[in-house]
Image 1 (cartoon, helix red, strand yellow):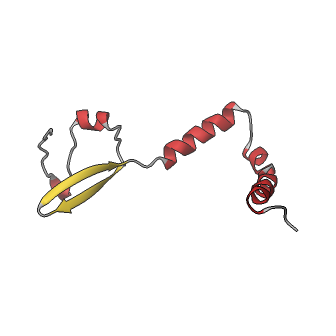
Image 2: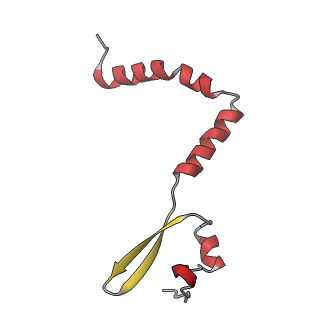
Length: 91
């Protein structure tokens, strides 16, 4: 088990060593979860995948040459197909 010392600075700020930030792909603004167990603290990276996923979807949309309007245009049809697959044909 690796141990690293960190110092509490002004206003409770902690600086994580660069090696740990790089290892866990942590950037400014990322959220960590702090767990307190019987006097011991554990920090766990809680990396939100939503912004990264949104960026990837946007990249793929642009790569395919589609507009947001193009995607929305087929949404009702896709919903109808999904409903029919799950529940049978609508009346």
